[in-house]
Image (cartoon, rainbow, N blue to C red; front, side, top):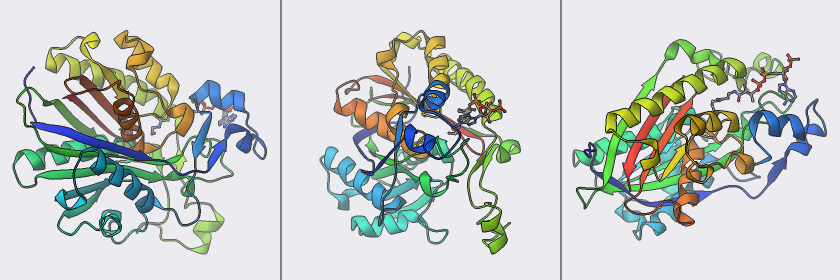
Length: 330
Ligand code: UT7
């Protein structure tokens, strides 16, 4: 069980907007029901950004909390990575807007677009940049305001997604026993149109036609994504544990992207892990894409389910399609 990336998670923070949308809200104007949504997805409610809130503002709150949790000052951060599929605007990167809001003076900052795998991508990238010594302290945040990308008239997507942000502070490990034992990132671009937003970019800029045809909203081939997500995540966890020579019961906690409770349960059953070792927040937050793992990791640390020295699994799969896995000794 060698440490391959000698970095630790020093602090975590998260934030969700105050306003919530219940399943009954959607059932009040769409042909859907609380029962269908709970049975098929596990979602009971989701949070929605209010006026004046955007991806950068909710990310800022999660970032401040993570830096405070790490016992550091914002000026200690020299690398800021924002992982999002829902930027404030196409130009500039939302990380620069975030950096300005946080008042961080000296730091490289950029966005990572890897959808639901965003935070795992960001943490692996930060881990490599810290290991080489190029940077000392990284602040990596997964944040999304997906409710503004969802078509409120499309019952197959609008019920799924929610808004939120989760952040981690990472530094070089002071202890040779603590760090990442495994990092894996991947993508299959042939499935780019399994989850996509047809317009709003250079291929189909915003126009009246785009708005009339509702092409500026997320589209998803839900059933196709479901099938590959289940198969892929089961294989990812097997590969990760085998590479580290670990048995599932050696994990203190498995924190997977929250896209569907049935997908999470299928991986949990395969690992024969008790429910308390597998993070679930989809009931409360819906699918928050790049934010979901950060939200769950922060909650698990704050309520003592993840402690220093624990072995944790982080695993994500999402649009692109992209995927990523980390096994870390906290
Ligand atoms: O985060 C990125 C990765 N994302 C995922 O991993 C999402 C993976 N996909 C899923 O979680 C599931 O496919 C969904 C939850 C999106 C959909 O569940 P499903 O069991 O795969 O349903 P389906 O798409 O096969 O649709 C079954 C039926 C359809 O009706 P017909 O054609 O059988 O008459 C849909 O029109 O359910 C209908 N349906 C709904 N009914 C009530 C779709 N959405 C709804 C709805 N309420 N909200």
